[in-house]
Image (cartoon, rainbow, N blue to C red; front, side):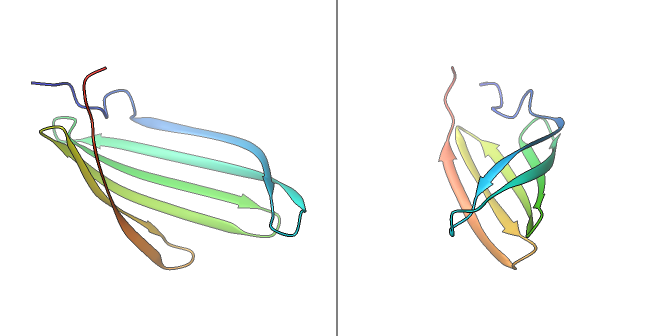
Length: 92
């Protein structure tokens, strides 16, 4: 059985950087992310929160892996938008 592509993703991180806004202004942005791998390594839940001086966003996701296929959903909670995702994972 192929190893799950989610192995090694569990945990959290934080960081900062710069975002360029549409009007040309630049702002510092700070982000925190947490990933939880469940089941037999076949499901992944993610949470990403970022904020600058003028805005913030919060992105959540739930992703499943099986037989080489990756499927899932995501939602941006601050603005109330959501979608689906799909893809394939191969060894290496």
